[in-house]
Image (cartoon, rainbow, N blue to C red; front, side, top):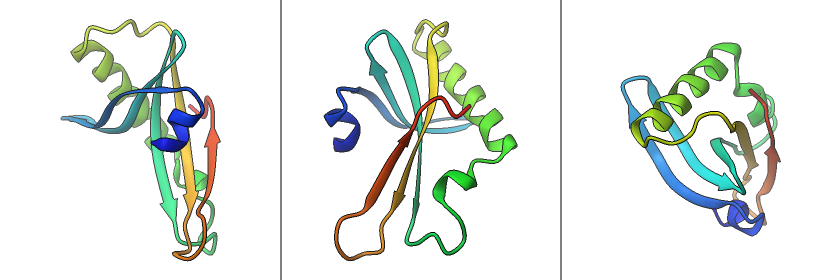
Length: 103
């Protein structure tokens, strides 16, 4: 979260759940509502964290994101779906990448 806050995003919610699934982080980037999926791996041995976002996962991200908007009576006309990928081998600093508009 500190990574996103350093990029001037305002965190609105974390780990919000509904019957459709969960959104890891909901943030505001100016007037844009951002739904963030966080994927962490210890290495790239089995692919990058971003590769874990399948077509079905992307659809689920959208459905849950729009459910969050409905539940919180938020405007869903300007929503972005991002992925934060983290490679954390357990020693040293983790490598973090913020992928915008992946869905």
